Image 1 (cartoon, helix red, strand yellow):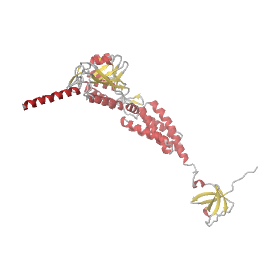
Image 2 (tube, one colour; image 1 turned 120 degrees about the vertical axis):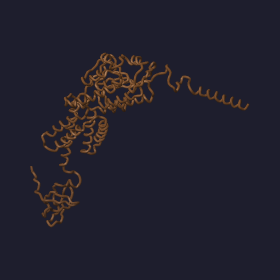
Image 3 (cartoon, rainbow, N blue to C red; image 1 turned 30 degrees about the horizontal axis):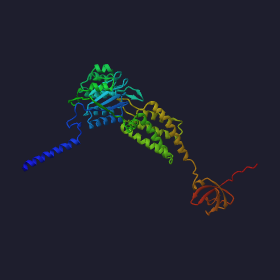
Image 4 (tube, rainbow, N blue to C red; image 1 turned 180 degrees about the vertical axis):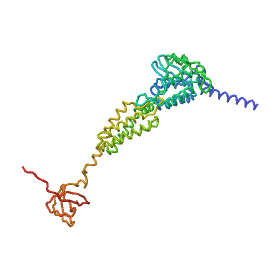
Length: 459
């Protein structure tokens, strides 16, 4: 009887626990094993729009990592870019290749392109897609100086081309795409229309819209970079467009080569103005902020330090131009040095990003004029006679009121509207009524020397 009662009690407790769980857990909640066929698939939508630079790369990498943390079904990257920095491109590709979430790259909308670094990124994804009226390719390395393409040593050119081609082959082959055709985009700067890319097995899908693309992806089995397979379940996709945050948008502007150069010049000019004209405060504050922002960009951009040295040399030339009568030789030399420094400041042989010539000239010439004017004001101020304190008496003329003896005993002189005790320099004896000039101030005593009486005119 006791055993039967215990069993009934246990059953009753189990029933109560089951009822409690039924009340706590909603009927439609998915099980821990996964989602059913009718569950929604989360898709993170990222955007590459414009030149590829460090902050854009950080935005894409962070978006892929967040999609992995949220267990999203897919990462979709829309591309419209002329290219960008090699280092930023490689950061994005590395994140794509190692992403636990399948990644689709999509050149869109119509009229867009995935050129240069964008071509590398397009082919790195699990699925590469393009919309009609777009193009890709033209990924041959170029060397840019001052916004103009320049010829370089043949050996250097081969090194860059061969390395870029090898990098492209390293992942295009594992994606099952046409390696030889892809390599021609680097070696021959070949570009491809949508049809050429699809027929040449560079891309996998052509879709006119995002909805069409997701429809074609639904149920598709893909082979990941690590060799595993995955089936895309996108029958009920929920797309979350993740744009840049205000911080990322702000920083992405700072790391543009032109903006970086302008910030650096403003920083130099503001700090220089504050050091040469202390107490103005505003130039120092503005210059300090600009200098710190330029330093941030300096840490993210491939800066050529020879360019920085040329800019520093130009600043020295401008100061010397203000000090010595060189008839503009040092000033012109400083302008040339700073323009050359600006043009080679950003070192990017793969993509050619750099300070534009128009920007360099528009910034350097006003900067040179302002620095030379400020330097001349500083040098001129050193020759001005002090107008405060006892030193203002030096060179002033006065009249002896009480004779000044030659034995060193003091007399009284009237100088600058005041009576001063005075002694004679070089042992002069100066009678009362004579005119004197102050040559030295010793405490409250003036040392004077006799001068001829000032001429007076009568009408």
